[in-house]
Length: 239
Image (tube, rainbow, N blue to C red; front, side, top):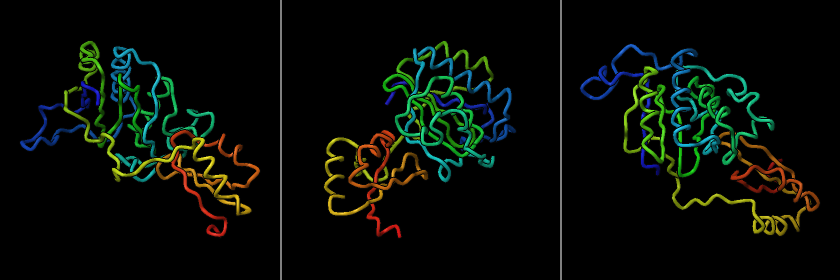
């Protein structure tokens, strides 16, 4: 966990009720304009102070859980033109430039249907929560970025941790990597079958299928996205 975590919002803390709930007039959706731009500029300021220019996508999700606001999802989930490989480029561990990372945050602020965390391990992290709440983590206090954020009309507040920090549903779950051991087991699994199907889940609610034979295992393996969840299904089970 990064030592400095900030909740950044467009909501003035002075407009909270006695229970800490916002009671002002700011809408929970993006204005697609000046306020949205202020969010992105604040993120850029924190990243610059943390000396970060590249981010890794973590826990990507498409549809379902990613509905963080009142705007309807859009075609392509706001990811069009961001990944040369299309939607499969949006996977856990994929590296993106800061410019692309900011476009991903824009898509999340607009509730386009895709969600993820963005991080530079040990240095910086950012993700969007409900109702335009933004969470930024850093290895340093980022005093200049805090001042810049306030000057943009936003309200940064230091918090102990984001309520959206990753916690696996099953603490015993181990994600199976597509390593040499997995390949050996794969060869053994299909040695007695003509074909087997491999389901590759590269983002939550997004997967693709590969038909495996003894002759194409290496080719399929080369196409698997890093950190994807893998599941073998006998050909007869898919009908």
